[in-house]
Length: 442
Ligand code: GDP
Ligand code: MG
Figure 1 (cartoon, rainbow, N blue to C red):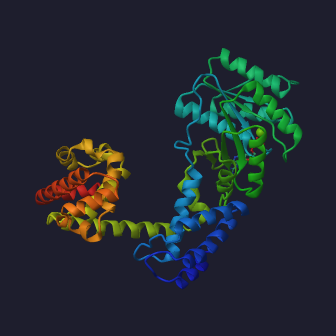
Figure 2: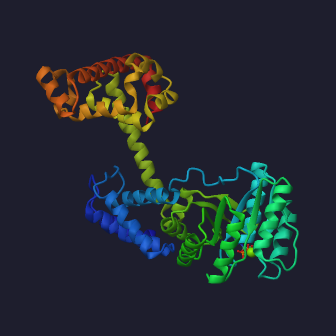
Figure 3: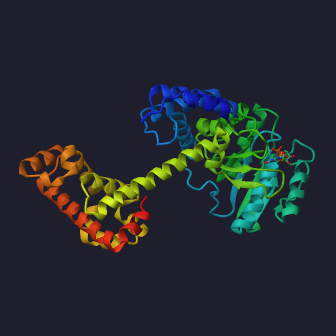
């Protein structure tokens, strides 16, 4: 694949920004990479379309090709989609003991194994007292399988009573978990080889008595398209809160992760990486993204090129600041940076030299909304005015303020800030403090 991509990249023109053609050509290869990684066709299509919009017109970092740049954009977008808004995939809702967790999925997907792995993790990492119960009355040795794993990892299992139905076992588990002072109880359900009505009805009935805090769908991460179908079905009928992808230790590319995330919108919580009880890890979007795309070397290359460029830019800026050349363009960059870093407060934590400056610039002026208004003022200046704010007299000031929907007094405050910062930069430059401050910034 890399070879094929290399060929495509060579054909792309070198230019400052990505043209529509650059993007289209590179994305054709990306789409193939996604399909080869078992991402379902509609998801791959939709994903590529979204990236196309974002990538067209995007800047190309010096010393990388447009195609490489597209791959980086794709990679970042993959991570964004995979991660969704799930800040902490390894965390489960298990307050209010005893918290029930329902494990669902098809037969052979890895439910029983994952139940035990998860129990071990909760016990060892979070110090929880865990109970496991097998509701699998269909397969002869299923309950014993869980009991054996329980012994192996030192986690209690609900005693087996022959002839009980899953709902009765679930009720018994609930009672036992309450009486025994357990923090969490995991319900390992039966699976089928494929989705059928009886299975779904059974899982629904169990859900209704257990009222689980988490319902985790356990799917074989290497089954690709089928996994998406399974996830859709379970989510529609039972309602899942998260996904565990098993067998990610195999050599498939794990495209199911992207498909499932896109189709169900439910977070991927863990990945199974082997048969051993330790082989369960928190889902890491960047690792899975790299694997799906299979272009890790390209991504690394672009990241390096970008980092180099940023350092060069920072150094150029620093040289100018030391000479007291701090114009409105610089101020705008700083303001934008502040917004990105969570306003003044966030920035102070990061920059040793900046605290002093902020005090002199009056930090009340620097909350997010104010920062945005100041940027609007700068945007309303001409190129010449931005480069040399000294040219601003009354009529120009009026025009600029009106253009940004603000008063001349607001603009005067901004000009004062620019002058203060310019002085400060000069002073800091002499003491070597500027260098230190800028290090944290870029
Ligand atoms: P269930 O039918 O859904 O309960 O599936 P099981 O937990 O019984 O697992 C079926 C088989 O898959 C067993 O042989 C497990 O050891 C194996 N298995 C489960 N998870 C993983 C994994 O992450 N990687 C690998 N390689 N094998 C796994
Ligand atoms: Mg099982």
